[in-house]
Image (tube, rainbow, N blue to C red; front, top):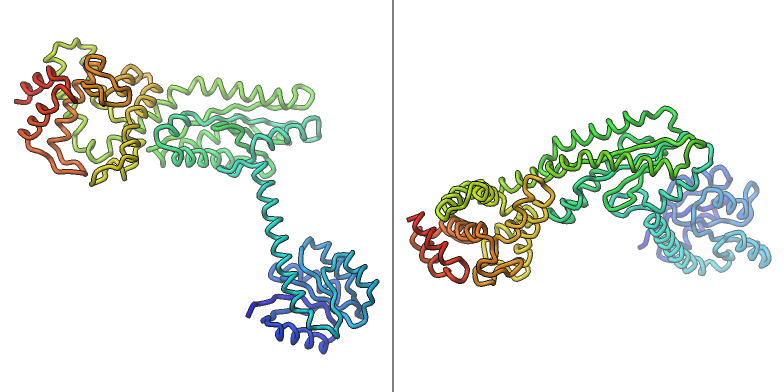
Length: 474
């Protein structure tokens, strides 16, 4: 039995009894409140639970047209059905024009239940339509990810405030540093989380009524009307302090925000000019701190890599030592030995962007998972390119999975097209992987690993370098 929550506008207890009986007979379990004045109806409308209003047409102290007016003033969209024994057709038509949804004569109460059911359905459709329209309006003016206003709203607000009475107006410009690097290496989910955290840090020190918008992929801007008492430098310091606190709790993925502001007094500069001035200040801040911001992110990624299971077991250190022995064996100069040492430590940097479910899977990888795994060379290359400390080994990181016969990735290089550092690393990395436990298999013996290196010499590995390596480990 469906539950019906109704406001009944009726002064007669007898008529109320007949009305409720008709609704129950029609299959409704009824919860109701009875009102018979404008004041009592206004009070009842404050409670959002009511679904419908059923009203007598004329009472000594109140009537349906007055009730309709009260409902209209409340802003509520509730079905309004008039039930009367005296209403004429002309009066009924006027009531419908005033907002009533139906009228029913008291001698035809059998019509009440179908009318209520119909009007409840129509009310639900109107509610869904309003919700849909509100969502469309919200999306047209807001950024879906952060919930902030979007560029359209920001520019409209600039136009609305220009030349108005809310000067001085401060414009804040902000940019999330290193966002592309985070997005490319750690994935969209990590990038989205950082964007939302950035939005929260920017919003926190702003006042109610200030407008904060995401105006680009990693760009934000705020409008602060009536900014007489706002200290721009203090505002920026406040945000920077919030960033420091955030990074102390999120060292695995630190955030850096470039900031700038400008103030328009109205006559001295337009709001568009103030925005350009704030943006210029932000870009200068970005230029001054760009390298530091990138280093923060790269160092965080290296730290994350070092915490991976097979890295913490001394993998990078073993590779570095064996690679240096190989480099010295073939006569590399000191500069190339230094480069080889570094690439041995950071060649797997791109794996910070590979899900653990793939990286540490105990069984074999699917074709789709191999496609994701093979992306780590390119991810590592992109990370290294952003760091002055690593840019000179970026090309080696990109090529460290190329094979002697040209079947490697991502470039399909062959033979001596592959840098010697990468050819050395491929052999050493394979040997270390074979002789230590991995999630997908137990370690081989040294002799079994040597047999594998010999078997793949000339296909996967440089055959001459395999010979050199075997001399070193034997």
